[in-house]
Length: 234
Length: 242
Image 1 (cartoon, chains in turn orange, blue):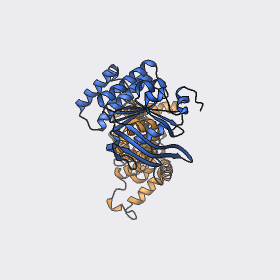
Image 2 (image 1 turned 135 degrees about the vertical axis):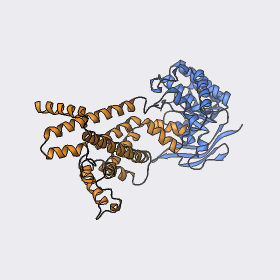
Image 3 (image 1 turned 135 degrees about the horizontal axis):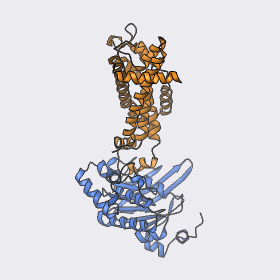
């Protein structure tokens, strides 16, 4: 227990040290996860709404596919993005994105979009069908109807976004693979933890893990205030 | 008298069950038509089809003299609105619920505000406008549903047992509002009711549906005073076992 208390104290000491390298890592971690979550929401939310609200051929297969991708192992995603961005064999190689934050964002978007889409499908399907009928009977067109249902499902959709963000902040496999954990360039909290663990600096790794948890807690609390309070409601 | 709806040879089949089979039905413009009949007679299905929420299996429907082919277009649908038995309120304020139909139609904010306040006052909901709609009582929620459906002055108002499960005071308020809509907006109203007193009180025309078919239709007072079909008499006097 004392080991963990020491790690916690070390985490606090690190945080108040305002070490530029540590804060650079924290800032990059947040930046990559936030950008990837925003892009995933922009893609996954409308995709989930369309799949959840419309009946079309192949819909069930699409839902099954989305659910499968929700559980996609990050290392597989990392490997696929690595191959695509690879200078030698990747079709996106000429873009020279491998081992950059952009590559890490691409990998994270691929991981989070199915999560947002899958949970949005469940969220919109959970809206009372009578509300949908009411809106149609009051003269809502297709886009007005979809917007209404998204608003009605906003709490569940908010939870989907938070879930995706949580998954991304904790992700290590894919970002390690496509980012390379390069100091001052692509090193984030999770890859940093993995590095220090590998070097046998367990207490430092644990302290970094605690900082990551504290940051996640702060961001999730802020999102929760938005989700349940005045931010997302009107 | 002009007819807002003319229905010919309308059928609706679910699986192997024919739930509607209407040879002809004409709904008069600007009047209140009551639809009565036992549960499962096809009353709600008929309203859903008129509103475009369900498709008929076969038959023709004319709205304002024009045949509706397939699903009614948005312009046609926007002439109608419907209130369901169970009030369904959006997860926002009473004001936003009331304003919904007007906002759908792109009305200016100031006009929306005026209309909302006018109808909120009329229905006793003025002091609840900022409240979450989910916090309203059943009667208040149904009044809100009705306001939301009439605020844009529709040509047709379809009511599916709007006063079921409400206390007498709320029933009276809703009936008063229905009559107001008919008089002030010249809206054609179709109301499903299981309450024979209500049918007698507010409807001018009456349709009795049984097993998906019309047994009798015509002037409400005539039907109640001298029904032509013995099944109608049995039903309105509560002797029909079904």
